[in-house]
Image (cartoon, rainbow, N blue to C red):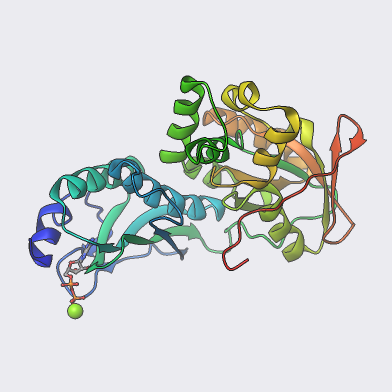
Length: 320
Ligand code: ADP
Ligand code: MG
């Protein structure tokens, strides 16, 4: 199959059509309109075979995941996702693979009302780059730099399942098959917190999505905001699969430092604490308060049931 045939079959005319797209796939550039009073939020994430996913990942899951991780970045800024472009590098044009991959991709894009407006297709080792765009009212984006001393620290859902799935897949752990399936499903089909991000606009003081691990991503907020944090590790939410599979130290290691779960971490001041909880629950999100911002610049104090807690290991970093 030639490149243009592939584009026509799997991308052109597929997925949703937005009214703010004047020109989508088919020209040298797409043309879109940003509504008055809004800023364009832009983010890019790449997934490389063997680095970010196992080579035998179901292609439908890969299509979902590559969109989800990008929408998660938009959610963390409080942006509404609108458009996506896709850089696709494939070893071969395998039709069955492409069918499933694009199905997974279009499915999640459609769910979030996002249009695929362009991309690039090349031959080489399997690598997928997505550039996701969104819109956010002027000045309302959630940044990492505005957490203040005394703010409460929240997460939007349970952590550690992706780590559980990956360690089990590498045969570093033996899991009950049902727990393995539950964890693997969460790794393959993460649900970006798109609605939560928009709810948090104007309520949260800062936000980030947890891609590299709770503690690693928390550090980004602390550094940008010049503050510290106290985290009650016994409050960190975990799934039944994780609780049933590992002892406390092992599950805390995954929940605090593994990453790949794509929940949001955010801070909120005392005045807005109740409003945040109520509004998020209206959107089916159960936020969990896990700690508080302190004045100890860059320092994270871990507490487990009232006692100081030590944890070894950090989040994932390339080139480390
Ligand atoms: P050009 O050579 O001008 O960059 P291409 O031939 O690469 O254009 O692509 C033709 C059209 O198809 C463009 O509109 C481009 O955005 C789109 N396109 C190419 N690959 C993809 C892809 N993987 N997903 C979505 N759109 C794509
Ligand atoms: Mg061109």
